[in-house]
Image (tube, rainbow, N blue to C red; front, top):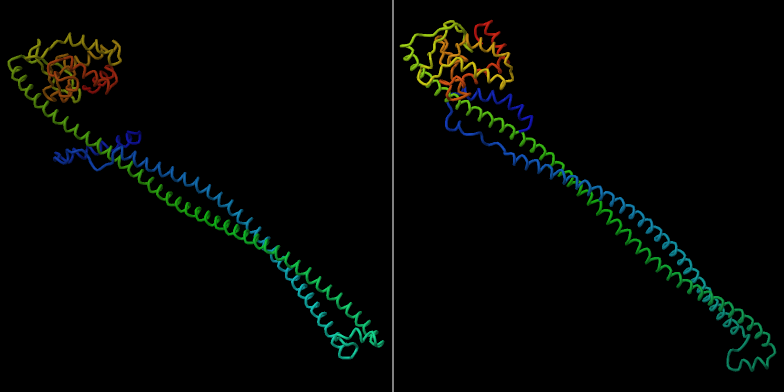
Length: 420
């Protein structure tokens, strides 16, 4: 039992014993030991559950810290992936704008070439309609014969040459524009793929971040649950420990009450035996002259002297004052005293009993060398206390030590109050 339980027992047990004794004889149920209290194993189990919950809370706290760190890292990765995606998307949009402009320039070049083709055709038609030349199969021969047509051919050739050059330039520009457009489209396709990849990475990073946050939230919820359970287990453990202490106090009170009952029964039996012995002694003393002496009793004033058998009479009672003094002197060292205490002890018990084993105070009932009252106090030193002065002396020396500290202190009290 721990020091707190001992202190509680020292205060509560006497009160419980007194209440049990005052309640009168115990029934069969009262004689049963207290029940319904937890055992020490149950206290240890409750404390073990509390310790396990505390360890689990520590583990969850460590896991939560790790998940929070991982969540922070994933959040930073998600931000980085989102930034890269934004850059790729901006580059794609810029490339799309450039490609659009090139496509528009290519369309304009193609339109210009088509316009030049139409203009050339229109010029040829107008020259024909104005009679400038005959496009038929005989036009070259006619032109060679008719000098007026030579000038028209020369002019037409210049126009055709210029038109052909413009057409070729427009066609080259259109082809170059178409080639550039194809290259830009290829670049745009590459950028579109990069944009798609960056978007996928950003989405994956964001999903990982959200999953980490969900794990953090779930773990934190688990931590809060375990903390609440730990608080409950701590309270339960304290309650079980308190009930265990209550049970120990109740058990100590029960044991003390049982011991008190046993001692009461034993004292009653000894009192009955003493009454029978006193009756026998009275019958024996009726035919013997009484021996009287002044003095007192160990626990009450003695005004009527004491009576006792002489010469070792009284059945098995041994009256040997000299032997009793010698035995007492040999026992002083066992109680921590020197021989200087013997004179006080000799005076004390000479006045009380003249060192007679069966000395009896007729008024108080005190008995023996040490004049114990009630006489059955001697029983704690030995069951032969009625007839053995050694047993009476051992008890008397213990009584003097516990109450007065030394025989001389007891003798001073005797001289002041006529009892000790």
